[in-house]
Image 1 (cartoon, one colour):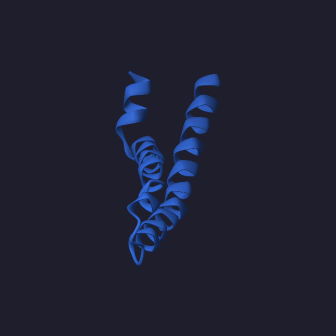
Image 2: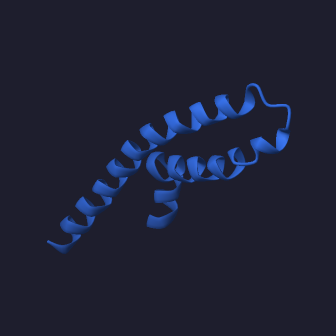
Length: 72
């Protein structure tokens, strides 16, 4: 019974991550386009770097290898 509960919690976490990724992908894409257009100063692009790490982490967690590494 505990194994079933743990599997359901893991499944809920995967679903939540995938749903979060849909919204974050839209935000990240819009932010990247807005920050890259119309600015002479390239320092404005710095927020894209940490956002790309957050995006990559959630993509990895929701669609594959991070969960495989956790399960061992």
